[in-house]
Length: 279
Image (cartoon, rainbow, N blue to C red; front, side, top):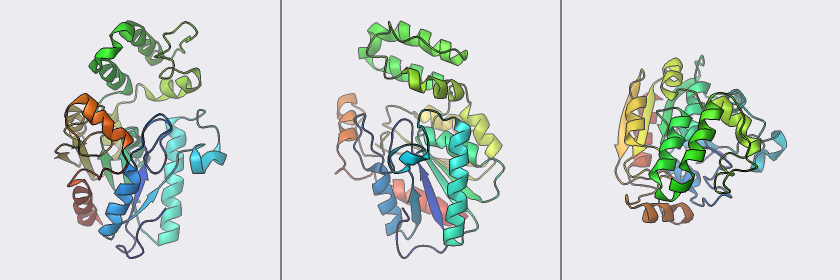
């Protein structure tokens, strides 16, 4: 979906979704209804910057492209490369900006490696630690998880060792996280170091992180900022779904189900500045 009829000649931002069944608008059947990516594309279009939003392999508009669970990071990288090639052909662009949100930040860092046709990377709410470490923190930060923490930590350790986990006797609250159909993917991604992958990309990079994000942290952004060619910008009161939100957990999470809320102020402006500086 290419935003804006009148846009900067040849400049296109490819928006890569975060983890799980997240669609090209930034929504998920798992209870996330934000329209975050749609609003982002509309905001960029207002600044005459075109964008392409995509559904991940096997999901939603890409449902015919294969099994969404039988994927690896290499598959997602190949798909991003195919989108870069398609955009360049359709637009006559020399290069494409890659914007990855959440887990998508890791995927675009990997996709930029060895490519001369990536204008720059925009990592929004990206992990600065391995996925295993991030999941551990997210589980520990929610007091409601106390009864299942030991079981969850044990399961994570097994996956990090490359071993699948038996969920038949697992607490029901953990089964969605460790569902058998996603374990192969988790094993393939759980030990990847986002800072190492970004260093290998060796590409001009904007790191954007909200200060009220409950899933990725300012420390994640600072870790990513240790890589080469990076510029970090913090966005006040922005949460993980790119909306303005307080630090209070309940009020923050309430924004995950309200697509009428606008994006956090200054998010689009930060991206616009980076794109125009690197076009």
